[in-house]
Length: 425
Ligand SMILES: *[C@@H]1O[C@H](CO)[C@@H](O)[C@H](O)[C@H]1NC(C)=O
Ligand SMILES: *[C@@H]1O[C@H](CO)[C@@H](O)[C@H](O)[C@H]1NC(C)=O
Ligand SMILES: *[C@@H]1O[C@H](CO)[C@@H](O)[C@H](O)[C@H]1NC(C)=O
Ligand SMILES: *[C@@H]1O[C@H](CO)[C@@H](O)[C@H](O)[C@H]1NC(C)=O
Ligand SMILES: *[C@@H]1O[C@H](CO)[C@@H](O)[C@H](O)[C@H]1NC(C)=O
Ligand SMILES: *[C@@H]1O[C@H](CO)[C@@H](O)[C@H](O)[C@H]1NC(C)=O
Image (cartoon, rainbow, N blue to C red):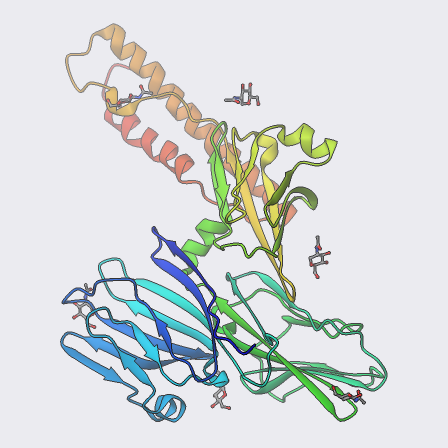
């Protein structure tokens, strides 16, 4: 049956103001990309179609709205876009398979925000869903699977933005990736790997500019089969990606490693700590710590969010420091992401704001002196520890992350000691 079907998943991140949505539709139908906001008077709305570069396709600024102001947009969408003035929502009429891709909504409200849409338009003539899509984060590794075994007469080719980026021929006499495949293009320099057996393509250290449509062509004799993969890289600022992937947490506290995805029922998610599996989620089944080593280390301190697969570690201890890896496998796309957790040393129970300014008895002053000395000693210990730790970390090849709490500890001690430097102690 060539019915109309729509699948959708929505995920809004309150704090960062980044949302994602997936839509799919049959060729010829209309698709509406909803802003889900009531537009405020002073708010600008801009819509982009991202095919490697962002193409501005529609905007509302003040009372003015514009659709397709350049040739690139006009050629692609000629008279097929409609903008709702109240909400800013964008409708694409008479969709075509070539409308598939990534659309971005950018609002410049007080907290400027981006919403990303992966749109898939299926052709009437290819009834099977011939497209796979995934949201990824900067720094991730992604494998696009061919589901093929290379045979003698097979040719496998990968394209991005219409440019050949990798190729394999059945007899393995002709393999190239990126730079060799197309003279001079260095977009993926040293970031592509091709599996010689299957032709599957690995893209490492994903960047924002890798967003777009990847096309696979498998040629057997004169039969050509094609498959498209759409990758959308979250539009988080670099700082936020860093905050998501690098956690510094105090001993005894909890930390959540957020996947920032809504799991599809068939996705498989695996968490590893230093390459040992610690948690797994498939469908509505989840498993935590299936071996003794994990059990011993984490006991009952791991929790999995069944919707997102996010991992929470409670009551953090020193031995929890290290690299956590997340593997997400859907049918044809695998994503690998690394998180680093560092456990900061225990905070010292000194309440600086509680120290009174005047009318202090000599006994209290002596007490304060001791506290000050303790704080200074603690700061010194922190500095020494950080120094030691960064040396250690340097040896392990893991860059040491500044921890705001430790920074506070150091900063706090300085005004205090200055403040009391004229006092008897
Ligand atoms: C949005 O941007 C426009 C100019 O592009 C500016 O006039 C307006 O003040 C901005 N609105 C906010 C809320 O920042
Ligand atoms: C993508 O392809 C188009 C058409 O071939 C080309 O004009 C454009 O420069 C390409 N973009 C990038 C970033 O390579
Ligand atoms: C090409 O595809 C057709 C239809 O799918 C199939 O019948 C035929 O055997 C294929 N030819 C080769 C050489 O694989
Ligand atoms: C946290 O772990 C420590 C030992 O590492 C244990 O003594 C303490 O009871 C735990 N606290 C909670 C709330 O589980
Ligand atoms: C997930 O995909 C990766 C890459 O293809 C594969 O190596 C791994 O075995 C898969 N994991 C599971 C549990 O299927
Ligand atoms: C530190 O001082 C603040 C404000 O005076 C107070 O609310 C807080 O409970 C104190 N903390 C400790 C650990 O004494």
